[in-house]
Image 1 (cartoon, rainbow, N blue to C red):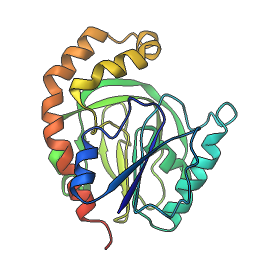
Image 2 (tube, rainbow, N blue to C red):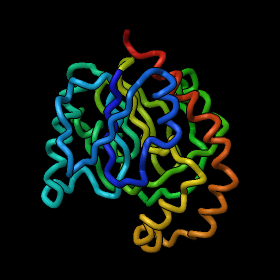
Image 3 (tube, rainbow, N blue to C red):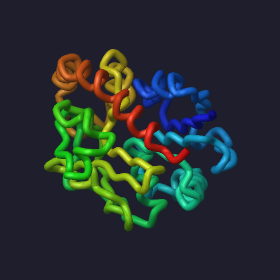
Image 4 (cartoon, rainbow, N blue to C red):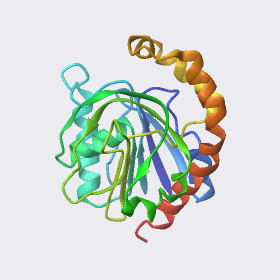
Length: 229
């Protein structure tokens, strides 16, 4: 089986999700958005769209977003397995016709999710007691027909699913604490502009990251096990 992974910046990679996909029999193919041809939208058995610092509405500056949105839209219309993280989740929401817009505040750092009743019995159940990494300024409206799975005090729409084939996660379950320095370097301008305490974020990652690295693989396993056969 082929899992096509779309990255927007090299350091926001599949993280803890990569070994789980390989364990489940997927061969990973990594493509760079804006550089590589993303290919036939229906060809891969699974599409994983990861995060990045650009926004869904920046199509005039980054025209490749139009093609990426079109690719995701075609997959979702065909009910092909699709998983989006952060920017990937926002692209999924936009592809489903929902509005993507600035949130009430930047949400960067570690915080627990408030799982909805549906979320507590979904693949996100392993995250109920674990803090996750948040790193975004934009958010999205809930697409028509989607189920809300999780919220935070700043961002009501943290996760949604659609049927048993699509999962969108605004937060970063895939993050690996041991690789956070790449994020701190790569996003330094955003962190400083937002007034984030970088040493504090590094320390929180060291303290809270191991629990997420234990829980997140089970989230992905549960979702993969529920995909249509």
